[in-house]
Amino acid sequence: WPQGLSVRPVQFHMVVIAIYASIVGPFGGFIASAIKRAYDIKDFAAFLPGHGGLMDRNDCQMLTCLFVGVYVSTFIRDL
Image (cartoon, rainbow, N blue to C red; front, side, top):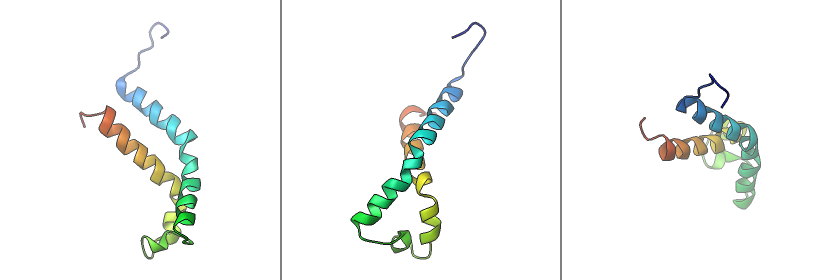
């Protein structure tokens, strides 16, 4: 690190999550579409009735939330 630059652990974890969210997060829509094709359904309204449109808009967040949950439970145990 350059002299005088200090990085706190929380800043490091934030950068890791931000990199993941910006690179892999957008592929959540593709994964959700693959799940829908595998189960031969049009949208997620079959999984959560009345929430199909809302769930289809939040595909990316589902994958990112899964990653953040696993990351926090694995690497950040003091919460």
